[in-house]
Amino acid sequence: ANETHFFKWEVEYMYGAPDCLTNIVMGINGQFPGPTIKAKAGDTVVVDLTNKLLTEGVVIHWHGITQRGTPWADGTASISQCAINPGETFNYTFKVDKAGTYFYHGHYGMQRSAGLYGLLIVDVEEGKEEPFKYDGEFSLLLSDWWHKGVHEQEVGLSANPMTWIGEPQSLLINGKGQYNCSLAAAHNSGSGGLPECNFRGNENDTCAPNILRVKPNKTYRLRVASTTALVSLNLAVRNHKMLMVEADGNYLQKFSVKDFDIYSGETYSVLFKTDQNPRNNYWIYVGVRGREPRTPQGLAILDYQSTTPTKQPTLAPKPTPGWNDYQRSKLFSKKLLAHSESPKPPANHHRRIFLLNTQNRINGYTKWAINNVSLTLPPTPYLGSIKYGINESFDQNSPPDTFDLNTYDIMSPPSNPNAAYGNGVYTLELNNTIDVILQNANMLKAGDSEIHPWHLHGHDFWVLGYGEGKFSSEKDEKKLNLKNPPLRNTVVIFPYGWTAIRFVADNPGVWPFHCHIEPHLHMGMGVVFAEGVDRLGDIPNEALSCGLTAKMLMSGSGGKMLTSGSGPPKTFNPIYILYIFIFIFSYF
Ligand SMILES: O=C1O[C@H]([C@@H](O)CO)C(O)=C1O
Image 1 (cartoon, rainbow, N blue to C red):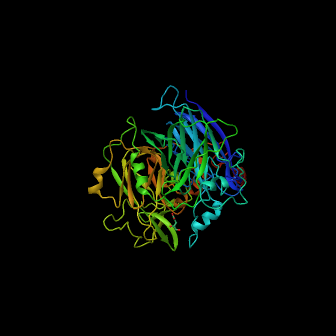
Image 2: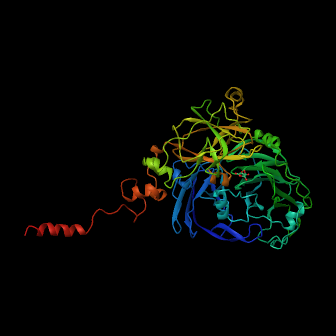
Image 3: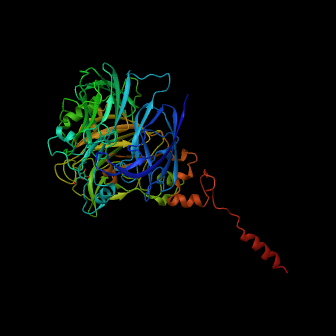
């Protein structure tokens, strides 16, 4: 039977020491990371989210949940809803329709970087089976952590000249890292512990590595989700091979690895056997890839429980594979294929959109742009503007479906670096099959192109292929995989390369598609897809009561009021009685 899970959450800034250095983190009900939600496929999740921040709005996005029929619960500020004001409560009610490993996170400003995130685990329905078996499971939520607060980060990114956020100070596993402490430093050449570091190797310390307590000769499922703000990661368990079985809530054709890459916005499940010497414990470790690392590895401990308290592993973590060994990264990504029972993509597309990713400037400000348009979000949520036809609330010119494929030189800095701001929306025909070719290019600096993990809301997509250089319809079309492409909600584009995806626009709503590197989104790296919004029934007024929709709703001329006490202004005014009297008495 399907269940409904109710939660009452309060979001606040609080003191925390994720890497043993006291700092400010975003917490939910006093916890960082936020509580893990567990449900079964088909269940309903209800979260009453109260904003306890003193001076800013908040929203939460349920990453990987398609929000069919509830697009206003997608939790994207200015897109699916108004940011929740301090002191107010917003009700997120949505169905989790597919088993898998998911997470949730802030989607307003850079609140994900500030620590607003947690896990969302969806089990299979009772009586159903997954295409693999295991004896127990653990979940690891991966993130990166800066000592500089997010407000300072945001101001720096938005300034002219831009101050880049730099590399993270720590990598966190389930919210715990060890900043420059002897433990991590011992395995990463560099300085010894700093005086600020309070980690003394005690497993009860707030930042002590997470301990996964296992029994020998069993099979465990490890669920891993990356909510990093910036870095790409590689995860390994010393001496243990892993079997890749799930990606972003979809089953994979299984394959064995010694380590695997995980980009921001992705989730994986792997199986491993506890078949090593049970008298030892083993490090689980993550390190930075795709950017020149300046951050020590993040650690957790696989504990075979031969001693109490937990013994430190004897074998050091291995070095993370070379950060710029993209050949290695591509080999791994190309091994990810769909399980044989996974849905197949339609054979043809109705529309193909090319999205060129460039770093640009607008009036001297550093931005990211897609087909030369740098995304800025309007104050009125798109969902309401489109549903009620309030055209003046955003630019009605759709951004271009392509860039100059023939002449644009992706290997060099943009010849004209100037981009334009835009908040245009791609309107997709309901039920059309859409292809997107994400095209990477050189940044502003010559000889440099970076990784971007792109995440789509409201849908899974098939990853049809990756390639080098500029996508060519003649050469690359026939290389696309229509046989067993993996279904995902996040996919990477490699430096100077392209990635092709396909999805069916069958979910009425307004859905962002963006780079999951949070500072990049902040700098405009995203687009918005709108489909079938006219098909939506009543959208809860709470979602749209800001900007021009608020004005409209408050005047009582649209939408159904769902909250008692906040109905349209009353048209009966006691002053009318006086007018009637004046009218009557005027006869005398
Ligand atoms: O957007 C970015 O800016 C910096 C760099 O290009 C300028 O410092 C970087 O690495 C990014 O990803």
